[in-house]
Length: 237
Ligand SMILES: C[S@@+](CC[C@H](N)C(=O)[O-])C[C@H]1O[C@@H](n2cnc3c(N)ncnc32)[C@H](O)[C@@H]1O
Image 1 (cartoon, helix red, strand yellow):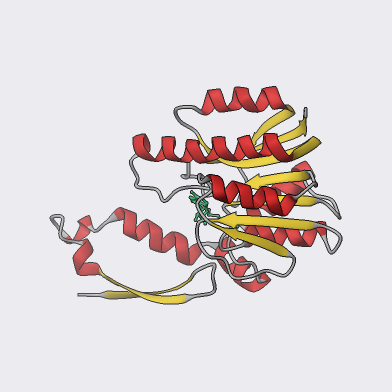
Image 2 (cartoon, protein in one colour):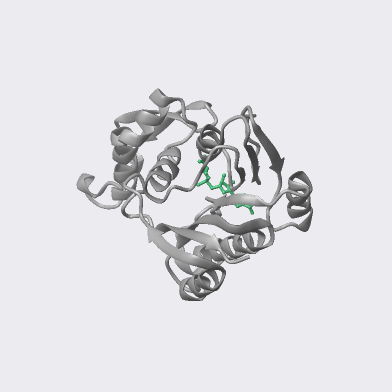
């Protein structure tokens, strides 16, 4: 039996040793039939240059580079802006947002999970589908309108598209709903979406509310992931 020890650093900075048994992966018939999925996951993790880069650059997750790429291409942020970051933990996007808006700006973030504090970020923990969480976010915004709403929210994926896509779509619709409530005219909304049932209807809703809507697949997004990012600019108000 061969053991593989994976030293995994999570975005929270928590490191865990995970032990994988090759024997447990090769029970399906011959020794050659070991799990392709586990092999692929391990290979991807160790080879993932974005994970390595995030550790060097001090970002909490590889997701930071997706936002950096989107910002480079679509010029999302400016100094002094008010940004709302939904599905923020462990904080990779919030870190980038804080860098971009600087001291005069504001970042308000939320996630169902805990998030270690980031200087310059106000954080609300809770399930975004609950009214109390939305109310707390609106409370933090006060009289201010947001310039940018970003959502990287995604539920835990079961691997069953018929279950995962509707759950993800529900969260994206709620994020769009909040963006429509809080953005200033001309504001920007960026959301991770999953291609599947409901995508076309979502796109139509976005096109009604924003002057420009484009789909982006950043280089740092895994190619086999169904995720794409909708960049919506010019909120019609
Ligand atoms: C891909 S991760 C976000 C990564 C983050 N943008 C970053 O850069 O570190 C997706 C996040 O969505 C959050 N999420 C999933 N369901 C949620 C819900 N119902 N309410 C709030 N957050 C949720 C998850 O907890 C998870 O942290």
